[in-house]
Image 1: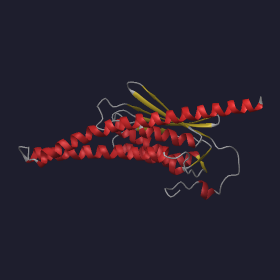
Image 2 (image 1 turned 135 degrees about the vertical axis):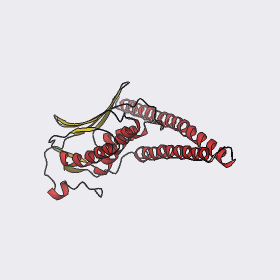
Image 3 (image 1 turned 45 degrees about the vertical axis):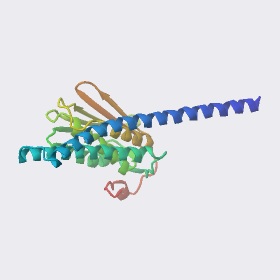
Image 4 (image 1 turned 30 degrees about the horizontal axis):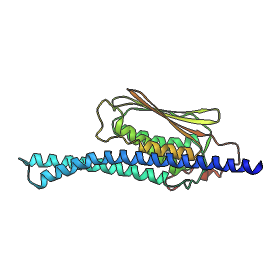
Length: 249
């Protein structure tokens, strides 16, 4: 009877593992299919404009400059896609990220990371309102947390309406810290198609730091909420070490 139970348990584990592997294969297949389509479109346009330029099929220098300008835009679009793809495989190409979790005062850490991104948005014509109260402490890997917000704010610059404000709200709730970012979706079609790879990478990073990344979208607004556990009571790091959130960390 015990042997039969053990064998049945092994059978269930093998079935679960096979299903998990099938889901992973299907997810990668879907990703490659989507990426292939997204890359092929600007690449075809790029080659077309370059062929026109090389073969001299233009009637003025202004037309030639327009061909070159459009070609450059398509090349930048391809670069953005390949950068996102690299980030995706950097995160999903390994079972666990080499996280170096350290304890920080949340408001000091987020004031620097979020403040830098908010300032960059303002330089690019956005109006930004940030609310950052005292929050407690977080235990995170700063390098990977920066990568999460790099992805989130990069999406805002690409797809948000510049004439509408961007709201950033940080709020502690029970044992968690909620970082909510809300923007209005641009009514103008973006030159760069969204592959959602950045969001997938950010979500995977958050999960490995015991957090979550939730998104909500309607016809006008896009809201992303990053949730991290607040650090439990334990001996704090040295003050200099705890507040050092420089790029080197």
